[in-house]
Image 1: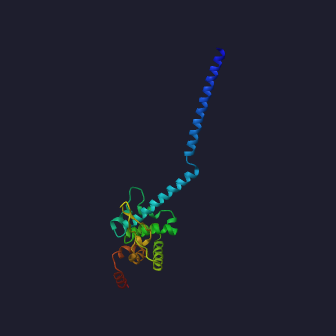
Image 2: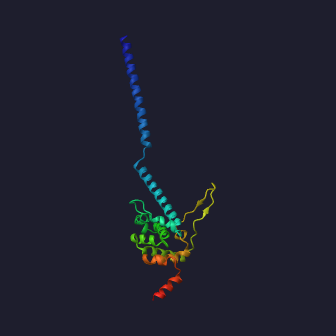
Image 3: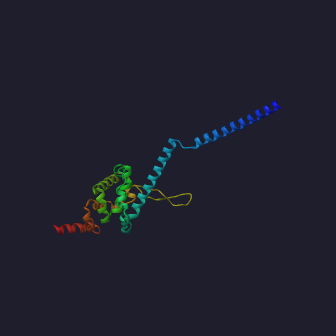
Length: 218
């Protein structure tokens, strides 16, 4: 009986040891699975880059929309200078985008046409813009675009493209000609080449009327 009891105790202990070993194995498997599923530093960096790329893409689409929304519509361009509390206006925000948007060619062509659209023939917006950014920067950009367009094939504007889902899909083009028709470029260059205080007087004038006023003043 004593031996049997010993064997019974030993069997029980053996059973407990087997259960503990099985439990440890399950816990190890779960730990390994969790470790495999958890993102590594490389994965986190890749996710961060992807999110940054998505945010930048969204910003560029908003800039494109703002340019199309404001060109030739005084009520829409006025919205760029609306202020809510102590927050800066949209125009101020645009002028304070990272410096890359004012020096890198691929980013300049995204931002600067929108600034041109939002301030063209709007003397108030032009004054705000001139307090944040040299107008010479914009007039030079326009001159560069005019020269480049004269030497290259014309760029088509954004056009609807066929889609199997029958939803309207638009090919977005950030070129200046997609936001400001080339026919308006000479007038835009003249507008942004003048002093802001003179913009109000010349906004509704034709080149002939401007020359007539200049002749009369002399």
